[in-house]
Figure (cartoon, helix red, strand yellow):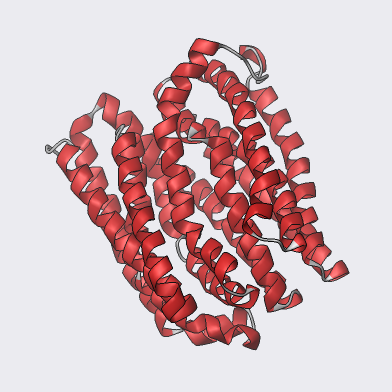
Length: 415
């Protein structure tokens, strides 16, 4: 029991490092706010939102399936990895086609289009990372997963800051993303090759029947992730398409700070998902108790952190982004008020994945997305960026209520 506890503590530290490294991306975006005009910051944020959504098409749920299946059967992990990588290549090709066409359909800004192309290539390589991360998490190799994630973010931060300082140019920042991801892609390939050297390697494999089975398992999660990322970024996309780059920049600054306070529940979710996947198969009586503890901890943390940021929104915005982003204060206060909901959502998503409620998770998220889109279309014309923030919080509340109703009905009742 002591060994397990020690391992859990170590994994918690590694997961903290992985999730915390997302703060390095936040730092880069803060630096970008200092070097770029609000107008260019809005362009970059819009392009990043488009690329992030299309990245989920490239993964289509395969990373989450990898975590779950590897956690349940370590022996078959190398073979599973090879098939997932093969299937992933097909989806990456489709995602690149979308990147080549969608930006020009939505907007005529050539700078935005170039940014979308660069960030789309970066997203394609990062999609490969997601498979590697899923494989390592399923094996409980949070140490190596942390190494991959932190190295990627450190390199991205270094090259991004260099590009901004040297060129003061938003397209140069996009190119820095591509270069960083190419370097890391080579490193991750070498790592996976060494880990699987005695089990057939990590070369992509084609098998029609296995691909069909993998895709059947991954599609509900894939559609869920697409819905989730649309849910998270649809406000930025709508603002970018219907309002000015400046307003998009203000809102994105507020949303980046808000994202920063949601890293803690992502750490808990990364640890909870593999453990619940195992318990759901081997000891279901312990599942509900673990879920209750995790959700309660996330809710408390959301209240504390969200309330703190809401109270200190103005000095936080001015210190991090500068006086030019004063208009970001109001939407940040609104978003922070919804931290309770998004903190719980992180955990509930992990629970649904671990307990095979993929289709219900997809339905719930699709309803949340539809709510978010409708509210954004109604509120943005009236209240601008504050309306976008209000739509996000309301949609998060709906999503949490639906997830709780679904999960509590199907989780084992005995602790």
